[in-house]
Image (cartoon, rainbow, N blue to C red):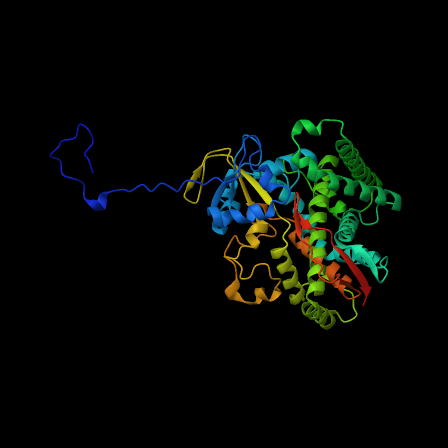
Length: 469
């Protein structure tokens, strides 16, 4: 080591064990294929899944891509780094990033769209709606709605299964929120408006802010439907407040009306209740419907696994309807759902953003750094899951195949883990236990369905034939 200028040339060299070696972290690579003005847009469309899946094995634990002109996003790909990013203390230095900025603009402040202490407060407010006693009361509603849908199916009918499951999930959630407080006409109108908002939101998230203010048909449909939904919710809240009815109606609206705002100490406003219901409807319906559809598809492709599920349902339930008490006694069905949540997880690029200088692994990231992670690519990584594209519920019986922390994230993790995960699992179990004992689905010979990435990852056209058992 050369002595610094001005030092005494006869000074003794420092002992080696006192040397401090500063190891610079490796530079974060930038993914190839970026174009001026467009960034990686043309690598992401029309099908972004192969591009995102290729990044980890080409570039390692973190890679930079450009999602919007003039910005950079670091895609975090290593399970340990993702796990660290989603949990404190790092999670407290992040907000939710661009995707949730757009959701917040469209849906307002809710437990899903906000971050930090605001999120923690809303999570505490919403918890009673998802507590165990309430879940038990929702089961009968879920089962009744599923049976009503089943009663409309004719044996031999060919149907788009995902669209049918969207309809079922929307009915389940709407009935769970409002029970029988809405007359049939209002219920149909609310359901149609929620479907219109769901259809519009994916495109609106991807267009720039100025385009949302233009009088385009897309914007008009969205604004009209959202306004109508808020009006319906507000009317239901007002009627319930002024009627003097007991706020123990067994539905989510009753629970939300007993909740108090932590800052003001007052009951939630109509707008706050509307924000939560809108967000729950959009997040819950899309994800639940997608998982239901994939389960029916995979069981149609794997008759031996379907037979195991039916055997378990016969053993546990017999000819009795499913209840909250026995919903947790179906380990085979639980593994099937878990494997679908791995192989067909709906999460695409979920975002975060650093609020302060943040250390993640060996890298120190400046404030304002955009981060993202892809559940779909993570769950299909061959380094984490042997034969990852094979549908194998029994992989969850083998402790040797247990993935590392951060490698299985169907509900997220840490402080922002989905608050409705138990509600969603109950919807899936009740819906499937009711459907599978009465109907079976078949595919055309050689038919396969591929995942398609939009705002979420969903199945492409899923046409199947339903037959009575």
